[in-house]
Length: 287
Image (cartoon, rainbow, N blue to C red; front, side, top):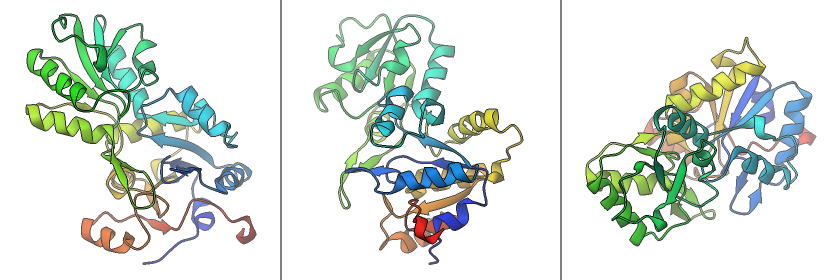
């Protein structure tokens, strides 16, 4: 398996879509040296965006989290999150009533800025659900996994309402070897238990990439899909999603795909990235 140097391939593109977790940061925080990558991109006139399935916080909060860790180049305009797509769907489809949600109070931002009343699943009274118009899966924290997941199941048994999944990630890494169930995995459990179909936003869905592409074209109106590089750590979201949309893709080995497993996973899945790189961190001594 050929390993490419990130600084050698990235200059072939006019814009870069970065996944967040496993590419720019991990369980310890921002990857050491990743700031050099953004300095390099800026110096070469290459636009960049963070395309993430994170719906746990607002774009402002996500950007601020990078800035306080030294990535001052990342502001709100650089954030493209699955929560933003869920927000747009709710704006168009839910005009009144209450929206129940699974997640933390911070994740409810995407609903509350629409002027809709939110009810965390932990506070929901199953004897008082007449005004509930929708259930949204936002985050894997902020609720009791046993009691509140059961409550969500019984809400959907009692009332036929749309269900939105604002983060399709099945899992996320806790450290180099261990993972935890993400909100996409929780929603899968509820969906299969009930035999219902939920509305999903996030990679690898094409709508996520179209949303990001439209945002990028506002800054670069003549930008073509084949001039964007999608950089991710996960074959089943970042890489297959980028491939399906027509982008070139770079798999980095700093997250979900471990270096010792990368070649066999690519062969087994048939999901083939355009490039494989050890990391998205650029070593300035090599440039």
